[in-house]
Image (cartoon, rainbow, N blue to C red):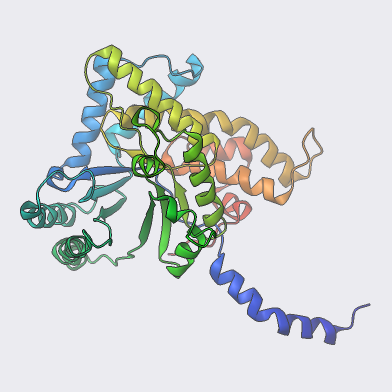
Length: 378
C-alpha cells in the first residue's frame, strides 16, 4: 500500500498546479446564458424598447404566419404558445447598445446618443436581464472614440443605476472575434486562449463577428454567413478556448432581415431558423439578433430544440442516477451534458420545472450538481 507520507508529499507538490488549474478553468458558470444578444444602435435605444421589440415580433407572426421551418408540425404547435408568452413577457434576454458598426450617427452625435441610451437603461433596470454596450475598437483610428463612449456610458448611466436602485454591478468583458489574427497570431500560435485568460476571469464571452471576419478572409459578400466552413474554423477555435473557463462562445448574426412582403419574410425566417438550429446542434447556445422579427424564429427554433431533447435526456438521466442498465452506457461527462441541456431549456423558458421534475425525477439543485455547475451566489 502506498504510504500516507508519500501521498501527502504528492499533494504538497501538486497543490500549486491544482490551484492554477482551478483558477484558469473553474468550470461551467452557474449564471443563466441568454439565448441571444440583441444589438440596437445607440440612437434607437428608447424607453420601452424591449416591449416594442416583442410587440413587433408578435405583430409579424400574426401578419405573416409561420412558414415551414423543417420542424415536426406537432412540435411547432407545442412551442408556439410558449413563444408568444415569451415575446410578451421577456422578448430580449441580452440587450447591447451598439456604438460600433450598427451605429449610423456621426461623431458629433455619438456623445448625446450614448448618454441618452445609458439614461434609458438606468431608468428601466428591468428592460432586459442582461445589458451592455458595444464600443468602437481600441485600434488607432477609433481608440479615443471607443474609450470616450465607454466613459460616457458608464458614468452617465450605470453609476446612476446603482445609486438609484441599490444594485451591485458585476461588470464583465466580452471579446469580438472578427479578424483572422484573433484566431491565429503572427507567430503561428492560436491567440484566443491567451486573450481570454489575460482577462483574469473578467472575460465572459467570445463573440463571432460574421461579416468582418469573412471579409478579412476575402470571402465574397454573397458567401459571407455564419455557416460557412471558414466560420466553423473560427468558432470551433473559440469553443475550444472557452471550454472549462466559464466563458461562452457565441455565434454571430445573419443580416438577412425578415422585412417586406410575406414571401420575403418567410424566406428570412427559414434561413434564420436553420442557422439557429445548426448552431444549437453544434453547441453554440447564444447568437446575435438584429431585428425584432428575428425573435420569432430565435425562440421557435430554440424552444423546439430543447423540448425535443427532453424525453431522451430525461430517460438517460434517470437511468444514470438509478444505475439502471440500458442500451446506452453513460459516463459522468455525458450525464453533465444531459443535465446541462435540460438546465438550458429551463433557463430560457422552453421547459417548465414541473415537467422536468416529472420527466427526470430530479429538482433544480440535483440537475445543477449533475451538470457540474458551481454553487449559485445568493
